[in-house]
Length: 122
Image (cartoon, rainbow, N blue to C red; front, side, top):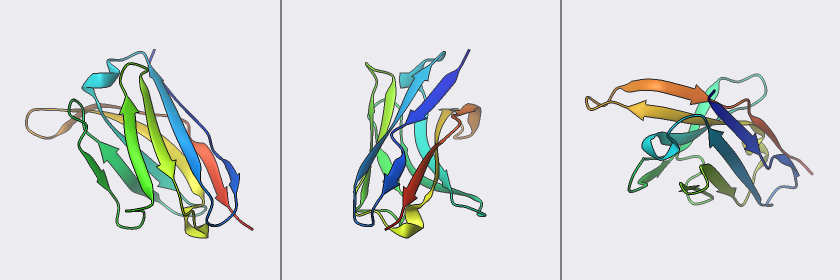
């Protein structure tokens, strides 16, 4: 069975740092594009960052660009999100997403973790 298990969330003061991890199993991790998506209280899903399969090309939402870094360790089947300069607006549940990208650019199978809570508060 496919599993994506996020960890590393917690309560952090504004300006602080935190690193999230997503442990993947049950599918060919290195063949999937990975991303982080978050949901603030009472808000909809917001895409945060993504990293491609293979060469690991990254991209970021403007709201977090320069503060967050996405990376992956295919040998460990793990996705990471290094977060610095955290703001109250970063408070959200952070979800790990895996997506199989077809040749036409569309998405085939996709999987989601259950999320990890990040709370930025003084």
